Length: 146
Image (cartoon, rainbow, N blue to C red; front, side, top):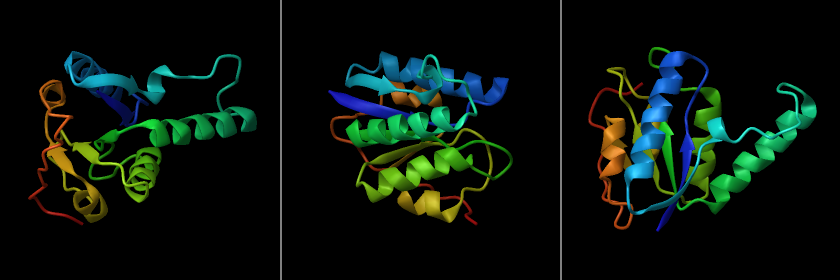
């Protein structure tokens, strides 16, 4: 059974809808044991934006990446850009030798660092429900990069 860290922005309705679809698809996958989604893991009693909130949130998220078997990263943000927090999570996971499954639903150009660092490339959140997290089949991005 696989433990998943779900990275991705959740700052507006479109992004929240996308991450909710990913959460639902991962929950439907019988090979997934647990999903850590930062969107659902705010620390009670802390005020967002305070130094204490920032430190504890950072430490929690890094710890959860360490505990995960794989990172699923939603890279759609604004135009061709990835959210900076998601980019950090992807880089940290890559350096930690975690397989990174990139979900890229929009028709945008992917940054070469993401394209080269991923283990599997998916274009629909629903694909996560059937993805083989036991064998982790590789797939690659074949579009333009910048």
